[in-house]
Image (cartoon, rainbow, N blue to C red; front, side):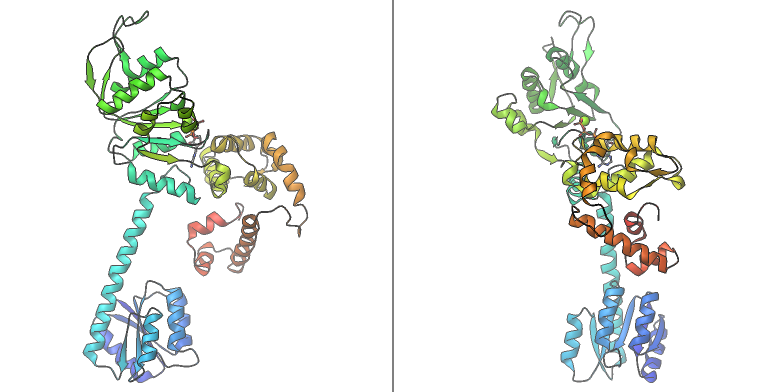
Amino acid sequence: MARILLVDDEPSILNVLSTLMKSEGHESVAVRGGVKAQDILLSESFDLMISDIRMSPLDGMQLLKIAHRERPQMAVIMLTAYGSVETAVAAMKEGAFDYVTKPFKVDELLMTVQRALEFTRVRNENDDLRRQLEARYQFENIVAESPAMRRVCEIIGRVARTDATILITGESGTGKELVAQAIHAHSARRGRKFLPINCAALPEPLLESEMFGHVKGAFTGATSTKEGLFEAASGGTIFLDEIGSMPPGVQAKLLRVLQDRQVRKVGSNESVAVDVRVIAATNDKLETLIAEQKFREDLYYRLSVIPIEIAPLRERRDDILPLVRHFVRAEIRDHKDLPVFEPDAELAIERYDWPGNVRELQNAVRHALAFASGGRIRREDLPAKVINATSALLADSAGPGDLKGHSLRHFLRAKEREYLSQVLQSYGGDKEKTAKALRISLATLYRKLPSEA
Ligand SMILES: Nc1ncnc2c1ncn2[C@@H]1O[C@H](COP(=O)(O)OP(=O)(O)OP(=O)(O)O)[C@@H](O)[C@H]1O
Ligand SMILES: [Mg+2]
């Protein structure tokens, strides 16, 4: 059973249409004229609209445009007078599913209705599938509002299930380890271990035995045989952090492991097969290290089968405030009692350059929460570095009408908030109605509103 809106300014036609739809088991609502139809379209949803073209004051073509805008998922069939094919064609161009000429043949009309309903059902199903697919590439704990970060998530979604070796590059604190964990968590290896090792933290012999293990007596102090990380991570993922600092000897051994998928403990002649996925990360420019002969080019190619580059936070500022909200929620258990950021504090956070990237931002949020009082976070509550670096910028943009020093995005966002607040007020604070009126999802509305609204 479908829900069908019938629009005509002749009551006799409406009667016939209603009877026909009922006989087919559909529920229909019949309205006289375009104006009434417009009203009902704004408040109710239908699977299909059948509308006459010639009506006044609001005719079928205008109504079609409104229907398309308000109810993009609804199919529309236009009724046209015999001989006015041009209007009918124009209607199809505007997105009508089909047209039927008046006086219509019952069979033809019912066939068209059936086809229209089938078509929208399939199309809407496709839309749902596509949305599900998009949702698949969102990861619970990764904030990704900016296009750059969304692309990263999309790559994670695509490559997680493969066993391809991955090289993640990005400045310190951009989220390289988080991305590596997400890849592991969404791979078939997720039930197995994810073992990180920092290649910069250990001197060559220790790093080597840590990674590949050693046999008893391999060197002074090797009192017993030790399993390396590659064996320990069997079936899972190994995360080689700061790979740019890996000593040359270890690089050569790693290259062999990647080629042969076998490891040999230090001091042993025997190789054992290992089944480990390798994800490496670095904040060095490996190309430079290669040019300086500090990093093996062949290893670089082995590692960067799939390169993932994470942009510094200052180049994806759309992520900043969503990250702030994410960290505040992570710190504060009672989500009904979240602190409010004063506009100055928010502005400083948005405009600071975050050389330490997301990690620095996370620390700044912790700092601010510790210093906040009365549920408000003021600019003074931020770390001194952030305050100092942004005070000139803020002084520059003092005064209500003075927008000097603001980016266009900041200006647009301020205007957007102003407008959202007005609409929200006009609906007496009802967020659901506001979101509906603005034709955005409730989640988007929450995201866009200033935190105290
Ligand atoms: N997009 C993000 N969404 C949520 N949290 C993030 C995001 N990016 C980073 N973080 C958080 O920021 C912190 C730093 O991230 P991570 O340790 O992954 O960075 P990194 O690039 O490995 O840094 P380093 O180069 O210093 O090792 C972590 O607490 C991480 O959870
Ligand atoms: Mg790291």
